[in-house]
Image (cartoon, rainbow, N blue to C red):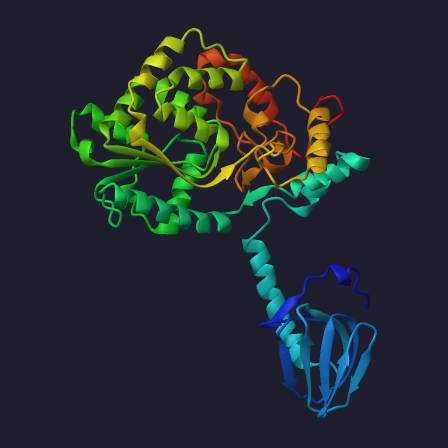
Length: 440
């Protein structure tokens, strides 16, 4: 019998602080064990037991005699002898053990635990398997590969489990703001929940938000429903708050321009509420700046920033309406609520990378830049989500983290952006290959 890849086989939890993986023969059994810091065992059994310490420090007691053992030391425990192990220090101990005859407890226990582990693996299939990460890294050679690995280690990945925790934190923060403004922050009788766009991340976030915080469905409305209610001429929103959910706000363009400024109907809805909260997990400092400027009434500066972010877009046909709609809103009644602020990876204010690492990263991103697209990925954010990457993430990562884009939210004046975004978001890690100089 052969067991190839035993080193890569997963350790199975026997009990709290004790992990092992075993190979069992007819008359003997090999176990590779891990004992966590602070753990100790004390028992006896009808098996001869021989062990060899791989790492860490153990106090091993056999029939009342104790010895401190470390890497390279070994021990032999007679059948029926009482014995125990205690981890010394703050590092786990790893060791090989041989049992003769094989321990039935290990055989049956590990079969059970392995089935539990297989179920867990099946129910929690990785969003980005190790093969995809290796394939992405294999696109780079030599020093570029080391820099690519360094960059990907800095990515903040918001898994579903992490988002559940973050959603509860966001909810608590939102409740504080609602209560301070005099709204019902417990039963939400004076609050409507919605999301920025359908068929985008807002749908996923709204689902997670309700799942994490047990918000009843009746408290959550589509924006179409809110629009219809507004057209019916009711004034009930004047004493109500509207919460609009999103995951990541990079430039703020989708909310400020595509959602508000380009639609008089949407602007009217926002104006009908006493207070509007734009709630998200992460907001880029670029968007934070825009909302601060809007609150100060500096509309022209916001439009200039938008033009700089999207140099390929033609604003001439709609700039007058954009300006008018933005000026018609009381931005002091629109309040962003978020947990974390994102900053450009290469900015001086970002301490994730050293000066030397930023220099290497700058060279790599310039070398493999996608040609023809000058959109908001120059924000150089470092947050991404299990269902897709925000457009602030450098597009060198998009094949791995799957940038998903609903191009229907862009106006006809953004035809060039639509064409380029469509081209950029269609590739994936299974097909992409890069060459220095920017070709995909």
